[in-house]
Amino acid sequence: MRILLAEDEMSMSKALTVILTKNNYSVDAVFDGEEALSYILAGDYDLVILDVMMPKMDGFEVVRHVRDKGITIPVMMLTAKSQIDDKVEGLDLGANDYLTKPFESRELLARIRALTRTAASSADNTLRYGNITLDRASFELKGPEGNIRLPAKEFQLMEYLLLNPGVLVSSEKLFDKIWGLDFDGDINIVWTNLSYLRRKLAKVGADVKIKAVRNAGYTLEQDGAER
Amino acid sequence: MRILLAEDEMSMSKALTVILTKNNYSVDAVFDGEEALSYILAGDYDLVILDVMMPKMDGFEVVRHVRDKGITIPVMMLTAKSQIDDKVEGLDLGANDYLTKPFESRELLARIRALTRTAASSADNTLRYGNITLDRASFELKGPEGNIRLPAKEFQLMEYLLLNPGVLVSSEKLFDKIWGLDFDGDINIVWTNLSYLRRKLAKVGADVKIKAVRNAGYTLEQDGAER
DNA sequence: TCACACCTTAAATCAACCTTAAACACCGGG
DNA sequence: CCCGGTGTTTAAGGTTGATTTAAGGTGTGA
Image (spheres, rainbow over the protein chains, first blue to last red):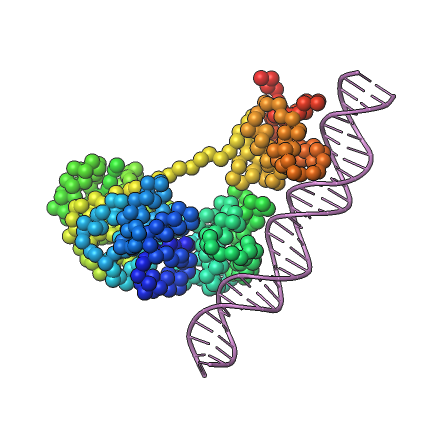
């Protein structure tokens, strides 16, 4: 899951980045509204966290521009103010949620989960497909023959595939989604991590596999199940 | 816009109904959790507002059941309590938003707008002709007797022909279009790939064929159909 | 029936993808 | 502060399947 964090106050930005990263979100931090807007337009984020008060363009402005472009990405607004008028303004302009500082990290994380929840993800924060389960809280991959805790990159790969089961996903998509636009390594990194992930899928006795489609991408599919 | 309101306290329910109705929402009010669940499953609502504390089944339970059925309708939870733990629980169970009583109607309405703001668009990415279809996302050629994933070059040939059904296309045109002007191989390559493609068309039971016109090119035509 | 245009097949080549291992970076404990 | 462990990235060689080449085949019109 990729999150764009737009927060000009450095200590807050750092703290949030640490919290989010520890929870296996891949975070890009920007420090003013204009940067935020351009990153949103260019990048492929699952969520944007916007401070209301920022240099150059405030959070409200950013949201307005984003929505004007028809982009429906979930936006969470942060502010020190707690007046209802501000909340109403933010939500009317297209923010999906609103959090007032100070807040607890548990609440932040819970709200992020709520905002990024999709049809494929269940209420108890686990993803299932075939005989495997991915626990998004503990990052554990569970199968009939054991459980393994996945490292961040492999977790994100598995998560993305489980959110799109049976869908063909190009390796560039995975690359952008998990390593971000500014990572300048080789696409090879995707293959390597998929390889590690496959080994772990085998180890827990999964009946699903990550199938490569040459020149096209990957799909997660269940063993004896031809659609 | 249809809203299901599940709130057992009569005065609150009345008040909410008035507010929502005034704002052009059509509201169905129910007064316990079981009722709420059966209405959600039966009805076609754009949003559900759920009180946490209700007779027979509380709001958390209702959400859990709804999500277990794979229903992704936006849910807003209402509660008198304001502890973070409750918020976390509610959001984790699948609610999309959370509002603590008492609240101002402006905030309620703003949050409803945020939750029901939707944008969904999906382009149909398949080409059809005769009894075959070509899925441009998955590179699959589908016919009555089966599906085959086409390799890139054959796919491009098929795609070009399907975009110009019945039109006479010279082999030079295909050559330039697919292999590019700087490719210095033989025109033979087109014949080879057309040959492979024809075999696959036959395999999926297609009623269309690629007809060669001596000294002119090719046309895609349907079996017994002279246009 | 000859030449030309096109077809088919199979083998050779090439690119994409996989796997492994080693290098590197980071972090918590001693 | 150093050390070992964990996680991430780079690099290199292997495998597989797509692409291209090449060579022989078939049909058709002059």
